[in-house]
Image (tube, rainbow, N blue to C red; front, side):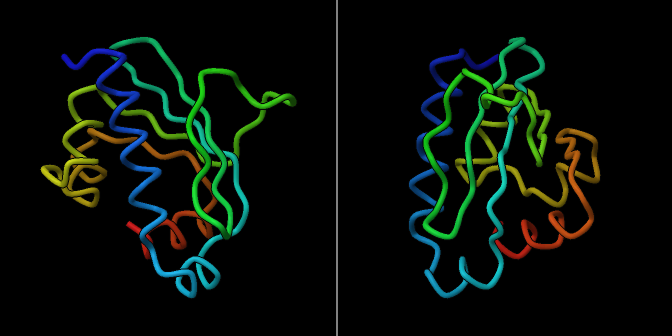
Length: 114
């Protein structure tokens, strides 16, 4: 089981990876959304915001209104493996290792970016 610090580091790396996505691709596929990432085995949830300029750093404080548009649930080891490129997102979704609660449109947009 990865630690909370390892999960934080993985999310920092994820933010950096989103910064590397071509601005034109982000403009085409990104709609501003709030995102939560619940790390199920650690009982911690991180919150971020996805927008045309990238992905804001994740924090442990929920948005002021308490709502998130895209909710991910993942185990700590799987989060680290996913960000490190050791776990394929599609296989993780199909295998139930990652759960995503989002609109169908948001799922399609995210698929193009991951």
